[in-house]
Length: 298
Length: 49
Image 1 (tube, rainbow over the protein chains, first blue to last red):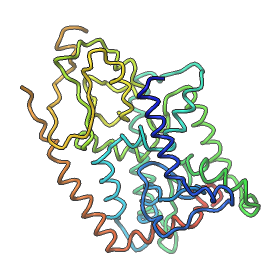
Image 2 (image 1 turned 120 degrees about the vertical axis):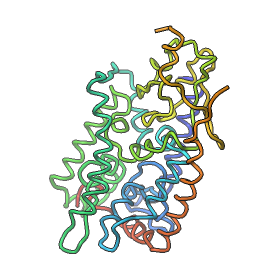
Image 3 (image 1 turned 30 degrees about the vertical axis):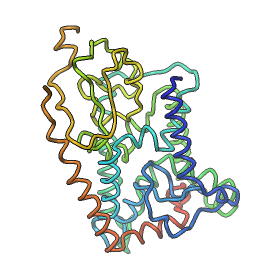
Image 4 (image 1 turned 180 degrees about the horizontal axis):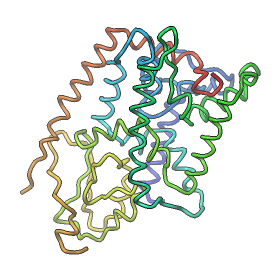
């Protein structure tokens, strides 16, 4: 593990601890109930995790949209837009606790796979469908007799709630254990599936399923945090693309929606052509086509 | 000499818009819905709802 990868892991651990700093919750099997819990954390972190000090932005979005008094949420969309513009998917690479879980699982030495490109590319759009349908449309349209909708994504698809909330709370509460039914087993099945997939595929949940990453990715090109490839320095060796765990076309599309800003491409670039950081002004226009083609290397 | 990417100018209006949205949301008391959801165990989220 490189020096910057170690640094990233440390930041991820620190972020996970800060987001879930209510230690008493884990010991007593209850959740934090402070008045500031309306504040959303940047990553996907279940607010029913005993340690959670803030709200999950995706859970918050469904909670307001599913409330009969509101058909739009300025507050949660504002928070999501704020994180998107300031950080983008830097959140996924550095601040998301479930990203850390998947990263750690992938470090276990087992054979690693990448899905074939013709399966991988269409599957990447699934997270946008999940965002649009289960997080926005269903809570707005499929309500009960009182005009209230359940959090469809959290209830049926999110493995984070099962891991961070379900396991610690159910293991400490007899009354919750008595309520276990098919839904709990379904969520455990999904969690096990994501865990097994994470052992061999890098961040499968982030690549294909996460609605939060999908939202952050939409604004990646216009955000403050940008990466750049210096065309004058790049010799088109392609190490960046071979190293990228998210299979980003680094030289063509370094600020595309799939990059989680892990910085591995930057680490392996032997000509130091890749840079990253917060840009206050406009960035440099990205070239048309790949640099390798322009330099007649490929 | 590099061309500048005009998309780079969008970030400031978007940042201001996000802050206006948060402010409007707070005025509409949307945060209280989030708070109510966040301080109670979400049974659906943990899989027993």
